[in-house]
Image (cartoon, rainbow, N blue to C red; front, side, top):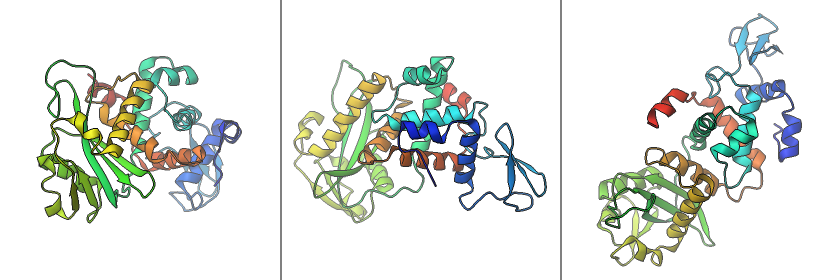
Length: 305
């Protein structure tokens, strides 16, 4: 199906609310609309995100059982929010989205962006494979006190990077409660294919890698996280890019409770950094929106307290 490839095409393809509704119908029913009541494929477009079956006159809400089902905002606003979030390679801040869409408050824009980040983790995505560098880093504002894996007021983050013959491939970035062997192996099993080669430093948390179905290349041990940059350059480059993105786009305003959502967005962007089509990424996110349940604003706001 046709999807926009640039801003001008986006404005042409989605010139009205009905255009957005037609697009959503095509994504939701890729083999053609099918009435839930009688199976007919013919329909009329109605208002309020509904269609009417030409055969049995049943009225069907197109957004039912989708990400958009609990929203009273026009699809055109959601489509523009998704487009702007995807089209900007460095992402967009809540204040930026508020200005672009003319939303009434910063809080509304902030909630919208958190909702959209939930669409950026695709279910059943392929695990990393081949040669994988893995290490930890600390994310958070300046804090006095001890440094290293147990530093106060900072969040420990595990990072895995695929190493290709030329450059790097995909990444996975997740917060972790600690750097224990249990937490590290949970992260590896979730994100890395069995039989892959794990490259790490000499931290004892990686001592279970070889006995868990992975090959293990252990580089010399170190005394601190900072000393690991030369040992594992690829994963530390990914860590630096993550921190720079958080600081540049979001002014490092990511609480420990919210950090994973921001990391999910960064992972989505990094893994698709070579994509030449913003429009295809937009289409993939809409596909996710069709099969995902809505994210309630109340839940986001309650968790932010």
